[in-house]
Image (cartoon, rainbow, N blue to C red; front, side, top):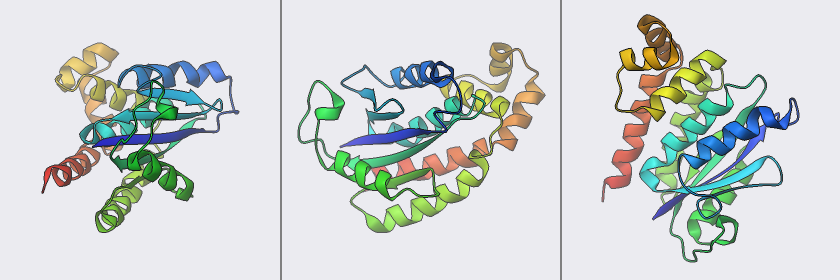
Length: 199
């Protein structure tokens, strides 16, 4: 089982490409090697393959990195399934995880994050939960996005450590995480992971 994330950058032309492309490459590199694990294509689209239990956090992480720019956001579709053909380039690999990711991406309209697995009932529940989480996440400020990205990248560290890394006050970190709905989003991720491991 793998998860395939298909995404594109919202408002990619509203600023210099360099403003967001370096950030996108850095966050994708966090999850594997180019071009077997991830690729950027058509200028502002990308694909990433990860283990299913990391997929939702990876999507949130990518969003938090892109939201640190002035104008950009990201649209991501997660497809969960099998990989029946593994190529040296992710764009040439195949399987139902890729097909589901592509289908979900095509169906994303106003919602900027969606998921498709073999279980349509679970997908419906999870996508409803994601739509509620996005009411907060789509409005992250640059500061909130930076703090959330830093917490994800330093998952073993506490708020005091995060405050030192970012040279901010601990109360400022705590307040930003509350504003960003971070605890609730991580609870959603726990629900997602729990379902993945259930028979």
